[in-house]
Length: 98
Image: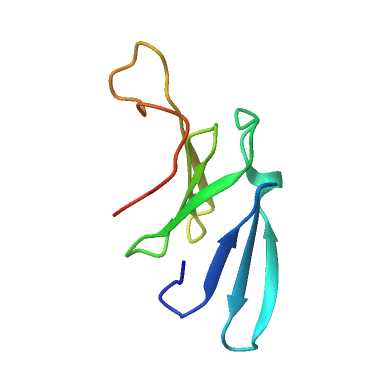
């Protein structure tokens, strides 16, 4: 996934988010696990979306969706909740689209 600056983002099975910044042509590691809510047990990132606002949306294999808004320092976690019609239909997220 690439962002509006042309940087390339890659997710890992351990909740790490790697990015290649085109300005210095180096890979950087952004370890997000320290920011994840305790409700996120499985940290494997299966999909990434960077929306038009620059927010990062991460789909996980078993823990739903994580929304990162760096500008506001906001992290939100969306999961399936049994019996709640407005929650995710499943916690296994393979694709995120805008």
